[in-house]
Length: 96
Image (cartoon, rainbow, N blue to C red):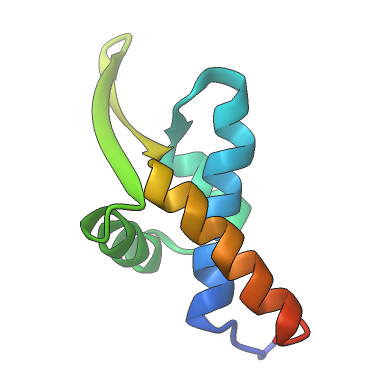
């Protein structure tokens, strides 16, 4: 069992990376895809997503998918800039 914890920077980097990679296909990324990609439980992921949305890095939209409603995210220009910034910090710190 892995007991190492990820820093907030690494978690934010994972979330933004997921949104940017998957959004290149169809512009919107399902919340469930972010949870899987970032390997996070729903409660923790929702906290981070809310923070990123409040900071203006992501936008959230609820859409109809058949009879279901799904939550989708998209990176803003600010989010794209910050992703590059987080990558640079992570690289400089040696992936800490």
